[in-house]
Each structure stands twice: as C-alpha cells, then as structure tokens.
Length: 458
Image (cartoon, rainbow, N blue to C red):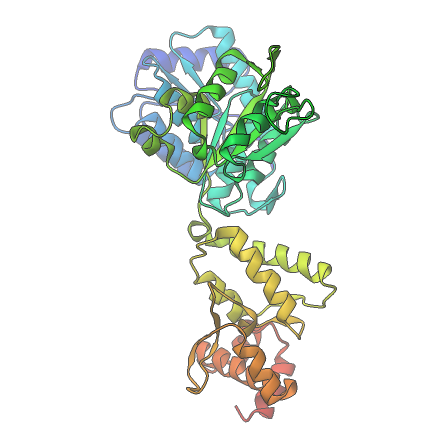
C-alpha cells in the first residue's frame, strides 16, 4: 500500500489557507485546502490524508465538531487545531476529543513545522486500530476504547494530571496504569491508594507519612504515598471521598510540590504525577460545596471518561474469551468456549457491575460448568441464572442453585441431554429450521448436528 503523505488544511480565511499551503509545500509536503468543514468532509470521503490542520472557529462546522467526525471515521489521522481565540475550555475539549495538538494564532513558522513533523511521525508509530484487541492490559477494540487508547498515548509522555471518570468496575486503575506505562517515568514507581478504604484519621498519614511519636501508635517513621511515588505516578482512587482538610493538604502538594509528614518538621520536595479516579460527578460535588473547585481544576487537567460496559457491548465477546482462558487455566478445566445462546444472554444484559461483574460471571460459569462449553444454566446475572423456570417448563430465570439441584435430581446425563435438546430446538427455531445455519450457530459440524437432531426426533 502506498504511503499517504498529503496534508489537508482547513480554514475559512483565504490568507491563512494560502500561507499554510505555501509553507508546507516549500518544506516538501503535498497539501490540499478546504474553505470550510463541509468541503473538508467531502474531500475526506474520497481521499486519504496523512495529517489534518484545521481552524476551530468556522461558520458552518466548528473545528471541534469536525474533529469528532474525523475521529469517528479514522482514529489514526492526527489532527492539529489552530485558533485566534484561545481558551482553556477549547484546549481541554480538543485534547479530550483526540486532537494531536492545539496552536494559537499567530504562531511561529518553526512551531507549526515542528508540530507537523511530530504528528506525521506519531501516525507511523501507531498500531492499526482494527488489529487492536488489547492495549496495556486493557481488553477491547470498540470505538469508545480506541479513543481512550489514543488519548493515553498522547498524554502519557506529558506530566499533566489526569482525572478518570467511570462507574465502579469499568477498569479505572487499568487506565491509570496504562498512562504510567506510556509516561517518561515508566521505570519509576506507580503507587495506588483507595481513598475510601482508609479511615479518615489515618488517610493523612498514608498520603504524607508520619514521624515517630507524632501520635499514639506511631512507633516508627512512616513513608507516605507521595514520597514513595516521587519521580513516578501516584494513583488516588475514589478521590471524591477525601475530607475538606485532606483536600486542602493535597492542593498544597499540587501547587508547591512539597509537604511535611504528620508530626514532622522537615519539608519534603516531590515531583509526582497525580492520576486520580472517581465514580462521582466531581463538578456536581464542587457545586454542592463538598469538593474544592481549585483542587478539581488541578486534578482534571486532562479528564478521561471510561464508558460503562453497556455502552460498549462490542467488547463483551473479547472480554469473555479473555476471562474464559484465564479461569479455565486457573481451575485446570477444559472449558474452551461459550455457547452462542449464553453469549447472547450476556450481550442482552446491562452489567450494573461492568467489567468486574462480567469477570465474576465468567469465573463462576467456568467453575460450575461440567462440559467443555459454558451453557446459559451456568451463568448467574445479578442473583439469577438464565434457564428453565422450575415447574413451568417455560423459558425463564432460575434462582442460583436450581440448575445444580435439577442435575442432582435427574442425574447428570439426563440433565445434559435435556439442555442439549432444548438448545438444538432453540437454534432451529432461530434459524427458521435451517439445519446448516443452526449447526453454525451452535458451532457444531453439520454431520454432528444432523446426528443429534435425529437422535432427539427434531
């Protein structure tokens, strides 16, 4: 495949379009210009570009809206945004939505050429998004997760503090670890702490350490989280649980890069990147007076929102496969796959506990399964197991343990036969009695399916 080298310049001011085009042409780059967002999108439908440089404020479609549209089509294209009306809000939105860089007019010629060179280099280093099933230990290749991977790669090498939003169980610590792995201090410490797990009277000591004799029980000097994480990264999970007093002390560390141990007199200098996480809406906490506004802005230089699993269902099969291999090896069992119907049950489930809940479901399913494939009866979702309702013979949900009791009552062979027959019936019904499609749905050979259908008089 031929290398893509053309740069698209988008600006509603003719003079700026001409200036950038001439500058880039003189430095060996091929360019194409567009006067507005609509014209740019039309070009993008028919051509591929190595880099896009766009103004932010344009009459028909803003640069930020254009950026979002471009990233939905191809995450690998670096986009540089330029503006004469700089604002912190635009800068944050630009980075959050995937911009490679953000420049303010008027800019120096060497600055724009330096950014262009770096942006084109970053594209060559990227892994093709469609081949990416995992990233730094995070499983998923949905568009939502690919955007997060892209953001991690861009902010990792910086020292910007990051605030990670996400429901419980979405993998906030994994994202924090990935940011550290992509930093310039990856060889140094990554020190995590869960703020809500430590009693309020001990949290100050955990964060800053304490001097011997500073309080009852302080029988020796203690090194705190910030000292341990010096020249590395500190991960503060559930940051929204900190008391007003600790928030004030944390703000001083961020502002002055120094602190004193509890009961200590020595000022300790530190250089620590703060990655924090919360399942609360900290902006609402600020409005309610429960969280310091100045601390919030210090922590949320770059905000990252991790979508709940229900918003990225396309990742469920990959996650199931990953957890299946993990727990089959851990439990020394020959469970190799999940039935298509069991997977459909998971795809139709909302996962209030997110990825953590899915892992728990698969772990339990592997532990319960007696065959080499996870069937719906081995799944427990929020306290219920999909299967046949006892006494009714209708499809429904069993309370946990009923499937086990049926196996004990009927005998394992009869129970497995009953489940097998019902799944074959369902596969035939779903495929409108096409045996070939039903066999494929159950991931069976046609010969084996035909034999079993005949066995059960179907």
